[in-house]
Amino acid sequence: MKIHIAFILVFLLYYIHSVKSLKCYTCSCTEDDADTSCLDNLGAKEGDITDCDKKYCILVRIDYKDPRGKLQSISRNCVDKPAYIHEVIEDETHIGYFTACKSDLCNDGNGHINSSSGETGVFGDK
Image 1 (cartoon, rainbow, N blue to C red):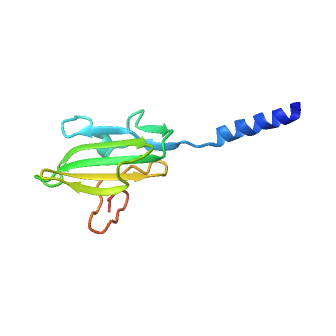
Image 2: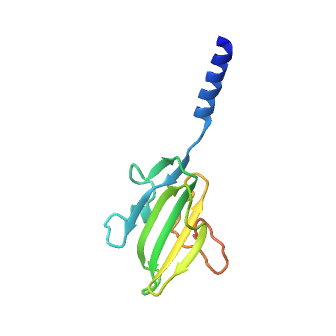
Image 3: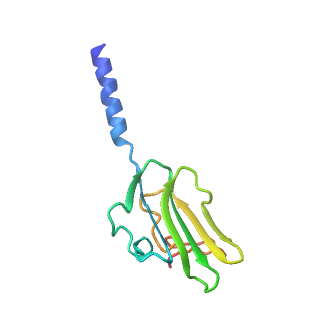
């Protein structure tokens, strides 16, 4: 009986140790922030990479329509259920780029995605 319990404990410890968490970039910045490392220097600051207990890494970029391509904000995080997997949403003044992925550090890149073709490099980087 003791051997059986010991075997179960060893198996459980192995299983818990073998479960790998998803690594995601977690940071944000807006147009007014002096520190833009979340946009152009990922991983530069301690804490920019998080071992997440969630299912997806996400990247949300919001640009102004005028001037076109001017960053309003960018956010990288991890979630269990993203609002969008791969979507570009526009209103009168902004364009929002929403992307979710499931591999380590996959929420890199500048956040732009091509809405017409649905193609991306790394989140739209060509």
